[in-house]
Amino acid sequence: MADPRNRRMPPVGVKLTTDVERRTDGFRARVRWTDPSTHKRVGRVAHVRSHEEVEEFYDQMRAATETGADTTITLTDYATSIGDRWQRGLDPTSTAELYDTGLRLRVLPALGHVRVAKITAGMIDRTIDTWEAEHSASTIKNSIAPLVRVLDEAVRDDIISINPAKHRARRNLGKHVTQTTGALRQYALPDLATLRKLATECGEVHQSYSDHVMLAALLAARGSEVAGLRVGDVDWENHIVWIRRQHYPGKGGLVIKQTKGRRDRPVPMLDALEPVLERLTTDKKDDDPLLRGPRGGVLTTATVRDATRWDDLVAGLNLTGLTRHGLRHTGATWMADAGIALHVLQEILGHQSIETTKGYLHPDHRHLAEAARQANQFLSKTPTRKDASRRDGPRL
Image 1 (tube, rainbow, N blue to C red):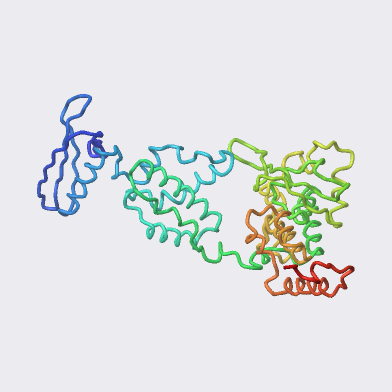
Image 2: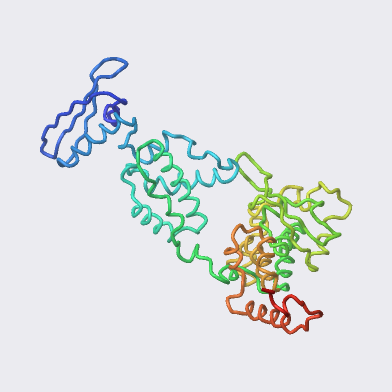
């Protein structure tokens, strides 16, 4: 076990004395001071290899007497010392849990042994390069975000002056993150017949799994949003289904919360979905869940995966690689191909950025051709009346 005296830091405002002794393998540098509480002489020793490292050690101890910060602390020790302070403002049922997992499983194993003051942007970039080869964009995001937050705390504690991870989340993470026109279409099913075939196969296990597939695809909804639907969310008068909440496994059990975008969003009711909605709403109250599993439980994406043996099922249909979230991509792609205006599609999908919505557009220029057709149709119309002020121009 390491000598705790070699982790001791001088309190703010004390006077330091230093001495150094040459050793065969380098130098033994010592800093001493009088403890303000006990009035005893205490100190800290460092074994270093060069005169430069001796001076660096002394500078660190002098800095501690000015700020009270331990600039020698490693990232692991610092993260342990601040506890969950870095999680302030995060949703404890979802985001905080994901970030905590990213910190424990990826950040600390990769950088935890490095002193906080020695972590550089280049070091972080190289770490992200390694993650890119193994993990998805969302996993990388959930790893960078807690690192940024922990190092923000280090800035506040005067351990470092700037956060080297601050802008790392904005860097181009290659194919995983860059959204270009049509980038998300690859995850979609080709047509309605294929969707119905998939739903039928899932229905062989239980009808609820078939209904889950149809709802997720034709509402372009996340699995957690399908689980959160209630009978009253189906608006038959306006032919709309309202996505208002999520229901999914979180810290401490199943969680009900707002949608990811934190706002209700309307989705047009497609004809192919009407029979499913009629069956699921018949003789039910508005507050009743729209869809539940074979035993009355919430259908999570993991439940659907395990019960249907999803990977084997989609492979048997030559749909290898299709995920449950691919059903949302399917609905979004079909709506984009139907010519729904981009800003309307953004509202349906609940995207914060329209750049994300563009990922569902066809990569060719057919949407521009349609825009030209609409513009030409508008311009070819004969005006029904003449505007005198426009004909005569402004009077001077």
